[in-house]
Every structure is written in structure tokens, then in C-alpha cells.
Amino acid sequence: MNYDLSQIPERAIKPRQKGLTMVMDKGLSLRQVEDFLEVSSPYTDIVKLGWATSYVTPNLKEKLAIYKSAGIPVYFGGTLFEAFYIRNQFEDYLRVLDKFGMEYAEVSDGSVEMESDVKCEFIHRLSKHVTVLSEVGSKDEAKIIPPYKWIKLMRMELEAGAWKVIGEAREGGNVGLFRSSGEVRQGLVEEILTEIPEENIIWEAPQKSQQVWFVKLVGANVNVGNIAPNEVISLETIRLGLRGDTFDHFLDK
Image 1 (tube, rainbow, N blue to C red):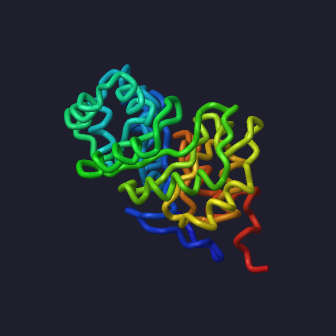
Image 2: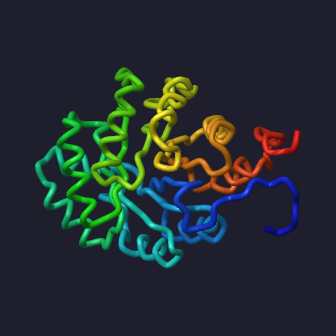
């Protein structure tokens, strides 16, 4: 850091297993990626190329190479997996991962109907080749999944070989873990944490109020995702109690 301050919470050191910041790239240019990494690389643990943006992104190989040179893992959004799945093209999906040298992949079912056993089989198969993140929750705001089912699915998917499970919120933070207003479904999150270790979960939390809520609940080293590239520095100050929202959270009482 640029100077010393006392009573700053200790952050896990990269490469870390908890305290992850997952950034969503929704179509950054090569120059924008370089500028983003110049400032935020120390605080970024993994990048998702949102939903199926990789299908239309120009200079995809060059973009992936820039992230790789900075030591930042990248993966394609789960909607791309679903797009291949619904078209019965899973083998083609594997070839795409191989073509682009992907070391991570996301398995989700937020936009398709998929039996949990089938999803777990895909996780198991993929885990033999890449590090798998699996997403739990629906993108349909009218579909409310009860807490016991979130817990059951998260446990099954971790046992199937997922490295982390992701709590669905979409890029807007208004479904899944959250109400349409963006308010956290507090009882859901707290119940999940009674059964699933917090280090195994990445909570999608694109809104500042959501990030603040999770930092206050879990601590500076909570895993959060779907962070906009221009919000990474802001999030880090929230984690460290250096923004008004968490200013006195880590101070000695």
C-alpha cells in the first residue's frame, strides 16, 4: 500500500482461495483490458467473459492472452455452456475450451431446464479437464428456490467436482439471491451459510449495497462476483473499511 494505517483487516494473499473478486468483462476492448489491469490487477482474482459475449468478441485470443500475461484466470460465462447444451453440442463446447486454452469453465442452468443429476455429471466430466465453477439459482425472477434446495444443490455440485459454487444474481443483482429491488434475501444467505462453508461460495453482488452487506456479514475476505471493472478499487476499499459504508466496521470498539 502507499502508506500505513492501523486497524486494517488482513486480506488473503494472491493466489487466494477466499476473499476472491470475480470481475465481469461484458465486452472490454484490448486497450480497456490493459488499462483495467494496470490499476486493478492486484485486486482481481478471476475474470468472467459475461454470458456468451465470447461468441461475438473481436480479437478474443488476444484478449485472453493479455489476461494470461497478468496471471488472471478467465472463463466463459455459464450461459455459453447452456447455449451448447440446449443444442446438444457439448462435445463442441469441449473443443472450444481446448481451442482457446481455457483452464476454467462455468456450468449453470439459469436459462434452461436441467435435472440436477445431469448438471452434476457435466461438472464431473469437465472437472477432469478444467477447474469448474458451478452456478446455482435461476435467472427468472419469478422462480423462487427455497433455501433447503439451494443448500442441496450447492452441496451436490461441490461433491461433483466444482471448485466454487456461485450464487446467481445476474449482472444487475436483481434475481436469485436478491429481490427485484436489489435487496438481499437475508434469510436465504444466512441459512446457506449454516451448511455450506463460505470459502466455497462466490456471491454475485454487482451493486455497492450488496457488496457492503456481504463484507459486513462474512468479513473482508468474502468471495464476491459480477464486479464491474471500474468498481474493483471501490470494492477493495469497502473490504478494508476505507469507505463510509464500512468505515467503522473493522475499528476497535
